[in-house]
Image (tube, rainbow, N blue to C red):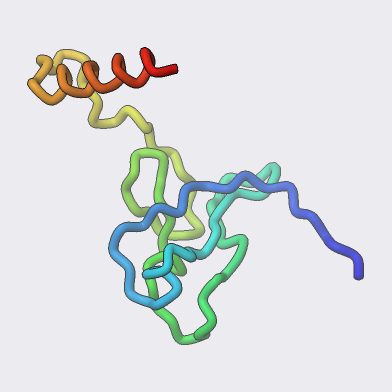
Length: 106
């Protein structure tokens, strides 16, 4: 049996709200773009039921983390809502402290 490989780039499949049993087990459908194409399509359908209407069959997680409909181009910016002018909060200091402890253990 000859295996056929597709030259594709896989996109993220992190979809939070799920409906089918496959999605509840984190076995989402796999999305991506084919070589020389821009549209995000479904590369592998992991749902066993043809009538399943779960989100990962209709949407993909775009670069900005929001859902977009399959068959569209992902032209989003991952730094869309990021603002460098935000002031440091208490949680930032806690994260820095934990990171420092982890670095010192190595």
